[in-house]
Length: 454
Image (cartoon, rainbow, N blue to C red; front, side, top):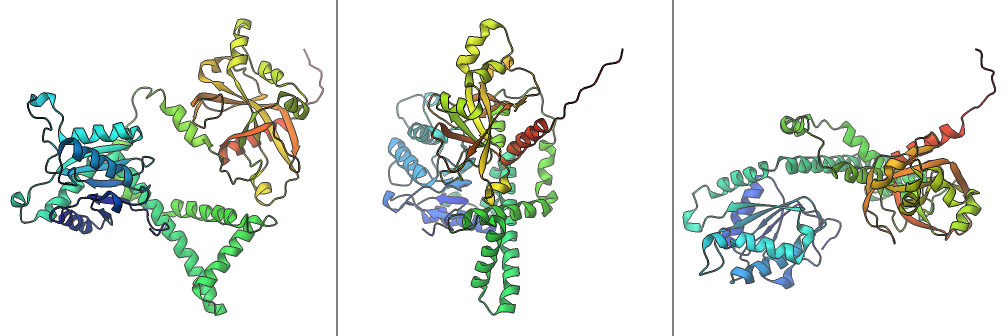
């Protein structure tokens, strides 16, 4: 595979030319590009599943067998083609036998259909697909039963199947808008490089290389090297992408979804939705190649004495200082919270390698069951409840509240090794900036003496 380009959005899995050619023609008539896989030979499948698939048309009988053998083979093909990490994936079961019963001698109501058997076999083999793949069925008429305008009929059926899932359709439209913005970034850079190439006599490729080098250098300034250049260019391209997304007029693209999207949600909603969404909005994992002590990085404390030496206070004092509740609940609080340390240096200082030290604040991750005991005080910065999904020894994914204390601040040398801190996760840029600003406000508070007048 050409890995740079091997990320199809649509896949047709069918081995019979009489069946897959009409559906390929129908997709072509809808101007939808796709990859076709026969699926009858396991050795001919992709070396690894496609991670970007959004829509899959799947025949259930890819070999001469039926029943359990067919379900097992098709589930194996599906797993080899569709990554279980992709979501959401709309899988259209496109089969003449989808509703056939699979067992003889058993009352029909007690039997599984071919489609049901396949789905159960797939979920048993890989439970991750549950909740990620949405199945719909589209009847595949036998050749003698098909109307003359079969391709037009298929196009209408495909559009109908997609329209039945408006939320997925909206996500796909957003995905296409992002791709359009990416094209805008590439096109803009190419136009500028072409102008430079015409003036300098360079080839377009060399001119593009020169432009990217200059962008990377401008972002990195003094922290510019072969090791850091690609990261700096990625930051610049991401900023340009955001600019294009903000400038695109998507009114007509999204307008059909305004009717259902604009309905006021009723009730409180699912209790787990807000923490899980906050976990995605506020936190991310830390890349193995990330800058040491990157802004927003959250660490777990591994050595209590090292913490005291750095912060000038025992960790237990922070735990007790943040507690407000009945004394008999203090032991439960101490046993349940997870102490952390967060780096809050400015992003620009890190990107340009201008830091001489790392600025750290100490705080606690408080499980949802204990958050009612968090003290209400200006010295504490409290984030919304979030579902922390990054696993670490002694911690399983759960809903927590992050509380940071402005009084517990330490400055660590970047030249030294700090093994007492273990990288855990990272606050995203805006939440980290919010914490940095809150700490700056606390650090600049002015106190003065005055006499009260009665």
